[in-house]
Length: 248
Image (cartoon, rainbow, N blue to C red; front, side):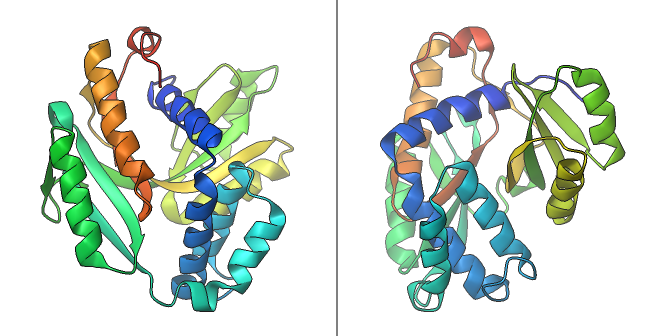
């Protein structure tokens, strides 16, 4: 088990910006539609992928009616969408995985290539960086007044690793047990604020300068703003001191 790391700080800062822009709703609707198409139907109890997509949408405050609409329209909305994953290297050698939902792979691949090159990186082939990431479940839980006792409870239900912020435990689980462990945590009366599938870096690249950090964030932001992109994962690590100097 490990304690506090900087992934949580970076993630929260980026999410705050995403929320301000209000750009996450359409991405969640696409993720839900694809999950219905590829994961086995519109029932989240029997469709694990859909359940994770709904959890992620709720964490970003997607209204219930929007979620229900996305599910009901999935058969037509997702008909022409395909999931695809691209890999590459960003500025200063960071590893990058980009997950997309697209109706035109050639267009998407070219647009991503342009973003990588303009950002100081380059696209790689399949497997070029995937070895440096693991599929994990990430569950956020509100901290209690006694986080030490809470952590022991979390370990008991199968938590593999964790990070801490001032207000949350961010815990990692085997990918295929995310929903099961999320329910077990909730059953212990802890407040779960989100549960989602992610790609977690095995080895990190430390960005040790504020100007470099700004360039990396600008690059990642451009990837995330492209309409076909669903998720972007990197192995960058940035200290709290550098984060304080960066306007994300």
